[in-house]
Amino acid sequence: MARTTANGNLKLYLNQNGLKCEDIKRNGYHNRRQDFVPLYQDFENFYTRNLYMRVRDNWNRPICSLPGPVFDLMERVSDDYNWTFRLTGGTIHNAINMGSYNYLGFAENNADFLKTVADKTRQYGVGVGSTRQEIGNLGIHEELEQLVANFLRVESSMTFGMGFATNSMNIPALVGKGCLILSDELNHTSLILGARLSGALIRVFKHNNMHSLEKMLREAISSGQPRTHRPWKKILIMVEGIYSMEGSLVRLPEIVALKKKYKAYLYLDEAHSIGAVGPTGRGVTELFNVNPSDVDVMMGTFTKSFGAAGGYIAGKKELVDYLRSHSHSAVYATAMSPPVTEQIIRAMKCIMGKDGSTEGIRRIHKLAENTRYFRARLKEMGFIIYGNDDSPVVPILLYMPGKVVAFAREMLERKIGVVVVGFPATPITEARARFCLSAAHTKAMLNQVLHHMNEVGDHLCLKFSRLKYSSCPNLHDEKDFELGS
Image (cartoon, rainbow, N blue to C red; front, side, top):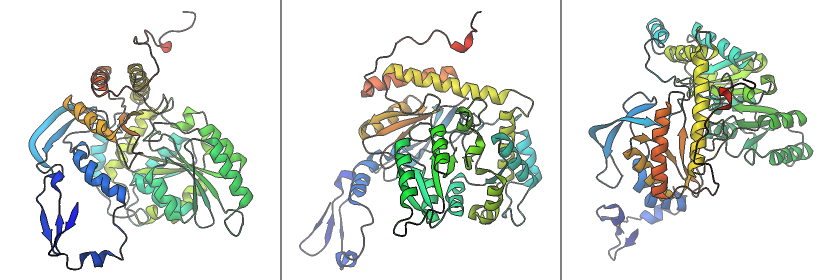
């Protein structure tokens, strides 16, 4: 709050944050600002000053260990109401990690598994220092691309060193002025940025709503481009396999049917679904039994299920060859680091069983088992959760900003690390906690988390569901017996 004093000085009052009052000379300050647009919107400014700063300790917590099923957090405190933090030197040991995208547990420090990664690091070093089109193209890069194409069952693929740039830099190479992008309203920021950079017209359809999508397709084809009414050069539908804030799965069979009916192209982002769903981890195309050739552009990242970094674009050979020379990320970005490349190769071979073991398929089944169990128990307790039963992303609705803060702090006191999400990442009335399941989580870990969730849910009145579930868990799993036995 500000007030002008009689001598023309601007008096600042920030007492609610415990700061000292200070006089600032005006010197024409207001006159200089008259022609400028406000740096913050009114509500964003209000939210930042009056809410976010008070609860900032719940985000950006520094960790000091491997982000596996358990991790260590560095203790920090604030002496000025969360404006700044200082580390105490203490550590919170062995907190259960329920926030990392370590779906298959490949973010690990197993010396036996990482031997090939260490060997490639000694052979190639940790960085290439060049683009692939100059002197940064290594044999393991080409090996990885062939492996990705085989894994996805498509003709060809190409890899990139950064997952975010895989979307934001490749979409502008595929569409431009005179093209139309139909984007799901809950698409990731990387997809939104890529669409905006492309120069194509963007229209947003309701999340997973096939009626909304078909209506836009019909209007686009019948009306054509604005003003000129010429036919669109291309119509590109952009969706995700698993939506990271909702835990919902794309309705892929219906979207493929619409794309064929209206002769559009389909761009599928499988950042969260590749490796995490499907009987053999091949993503939503396998889960819904959709032919991968029906998806024009298959995109995914290595930052989640593979415990590494980077992303890929896969599809027909003509598409990939075109992107190799037209994508800014392919032409100008530094080639993927050799140890990262080898980490992806060893994880993908493990999933495919090419390492001679069944460890990969065991992890996929373990993730599916953990996901179903955790979701079912939360529903029994009375929490409202979003998403599909096969999705390892489990958002729990907390609704009120005050309860978001209390929930995160209560869980940390119980040595459970959680991710809480609020405005502006979600609508201000739909704040939530987002749990990410992993194959590395044991049943005992999940039971410990569920026990504390039950306590905190009662303490903070978070069990909003009116549905009644059995208090007794299933005594058997249908897969444990055979008919007629």
